[in-house]
Image (cartoon, rainbow, N blue to C red; front, side, top):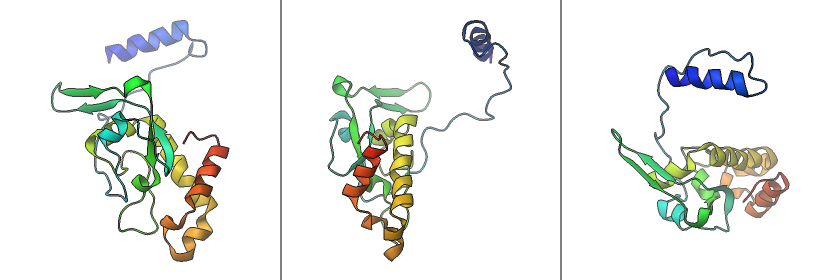
Length: 167
């Protein structure tokens, strides 16, 4: 709590627009970094992250390091060599065995290492765009037989690029 008060005072004093900022409270519980993940058509792995793996079926990118926390103060951190990025393939957002479902965010199909990189805001936002776009643009294709696997990947990728997505 002391750090929060110090930060609030700093913002009020030094950052334009924060002059009247007030501290109203904190979340009632700690943030959970890792929970359940789906088993998808493909899985993002720690090897994919560290090798900056590029994929023909990419619909999003990630660039955060592998960042795994364990009990106590145990922490594993591995940076992506050269400050590069990796691709997130469409299949990591498609649950195996389900036809009309796409997922985004930290529940993507991945190993623990892959998830520890992809669970941060940038990739989660990109994954949200990568599943929201086909739901909106290709709903008629999906509705045809209820299978998200029928989304024309090349057309989806072109549409994402037109929207400014980095894939």
